[in-house]
Image (cartoon, rainbow over all chains, first blue to last red):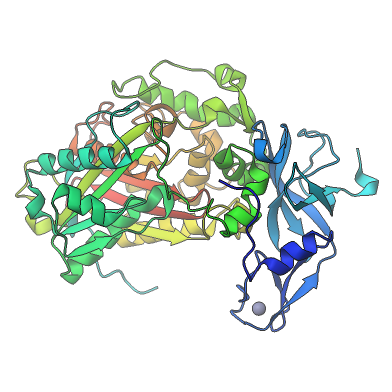
Length: 137
Length: 390
Ligand SMILES: [Zn+2]
């Protein structure tokens, strides 16, 4: 299994933006809601009238686990958080919280986070999240 | 909602069996385990391959299974939605027989989860370009299932005060059931302390809170209730069923309400409504336990206990031997066997209970509810069985 994300025509704008440290996802022009993962149809109202937008990067920690399993292909060493992130704009997605002690004491449900991008091993830049400056442990 | 076209007890399970061996079966592949279970189920029903005109298989090629069993079906269903696929197949088999597309359906499962790896196309998640491969698997670490299944759990703990010790009670109780079952893998008692001392997989999930990794197969024969009395074993009637799909593959992040999933509620509601029974009528319960917290979410999602109270319900002993709602009575995926997609094994224990031939038989049990998950936190299906036709 290759971990290197294989972009499709529908997802390439996301990955192109990630390479430049930008969180680029889609908003529906009709119902005004954002959604994830990228797709040519809005899952809220089935409109195809959708546009790519840069997100604020502001988010909260919806939930997580702290895995003890490595991802050798990425050179990711445990323990690291596997986290459900709630973007300020609405959608939730899977990511990891970095620049933070990887423990239940430091990782608080609903804590404010901000997007950051990291390379693991020789993989592409991946969207990650870190505590906001005022919330840094 | 409109009424259901299939009335309670209209169809029955007339043959049911596991593969001859389960646990560690290195001499058989997933296909070999499927064929072995299928032959055992045909023998159990006293049927020959030529009597079967409908076939369902998940995560294996349905045509190859037909060919290797010498079955020439008029109708097939290869719907693959993870571990609950075979519960879903019971629903579609009933609909197909009801429609006149076939008369006798064989539902087949086999998976060499331990010896030769889980089903090759199990979740299709690793396929380059899939949603999961692009947006989920990069982050999970090697234990993909714990990382994904665990996502609803930690927020639930923070919201409802569920403790690690309470989660640990689930395997403790299920070992009590497994102790009564010669085919169970883990028959020795365990304690909360033992569970909390087992290695960490993905906090808060420890090894003793995760299912076994086994080889197993199994199959069932479904036909109409009118014909059911012609078979050697006591028929097990289907009272009702439900199913629901929330999303694909992985990504519990995208589930609308991860702690109170709509898909469990939809599936359970349809099962109860189509069966015409209430929670108080259920004598025996199987809730697919890939992880120890799954039965907690299932008890609540199916409406047996209010949200936030299932762990206490288990702690109070209601699901253990002698309790008022015996659950996972083969020992479950945590202690009996779990080959990767466990739904068929869940149903086979329910059938044994309804026939009165279970290793840890629940006295006088007349109804059994089976609930299975699929694709981590993305699909489910529910079947209510009875040994009495309403
Ligand atoms: Zn829309």
